[in-house]
Image 1 (cartoon, one colour):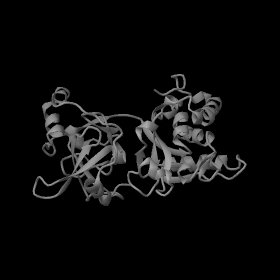
Image 2 (tube, helix red, strand yellow):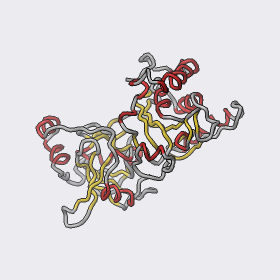
Image 3 (cartoon, rainbow, N blue to C red):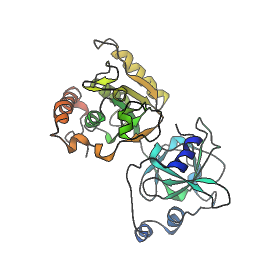
Image 4 (cartoon, rainbow, N blue to C red):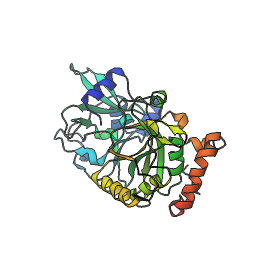
Length: 329
């Protein structure tokens, strides 16, 4: 979970790696945005307080960057701050936003920008509610709200190449990103995690439509496509980074996990050792690791380890296969 100390560290020492980098010319931004949106996002402007109806909107959904569509905040983290600008307690992902020192008003503030395209969003302050104590004070003109039933889940079960390849086959899963979670170091590199000293697990973070596949079904797929009884290893992959783990976001998700684990207790030859923890942060892996199986199907590890896992999934969970012939593009 982000707190003020971590925000200051990002602003002073460098920001997390973005999911992607979006670049356009000034002329292209002007063509895409209204004059007011351009002024706020590309010229670091500020809208008048209480000028947007978005301040009073608290329905479920996500808030995206108006420039590039980067998901920035979940509607569940929005609160009434009384400031006249939309306010949130935390971003959708640790690397969704970048942080920059701003002394423009004769005092030091922390400016927030979209980490993908650099759009000015607003500022963050250490006077918010909740465990992190943060208030993300955003310009409504920098955001667009998407009413969506999409949800996010984070699992680890050995090498993320394997886990990602399996969940890309699942109906209702719209994106899968490999990365790292549950560690003690911010923005770890792949090499850092491989040492086993950062505490991170290799995980996948997936976005899915609960109308097409439930959280419980995802849990059952996860536990049914790796060995949840081996501690800190999956086959030949050995180390704490390969541990079996489920990271939940709500009490309801925790209840689902506990129910499924209780049901499966005794179904394996050995006890289940899957860790169950609250989700705190996610750091994407290097881009060359994304969709590794699809890009390298003839590679030895893919043939020997990943292909059998996919075959097992397709046989055991055929009713949950993607309509796209089992392949998320």
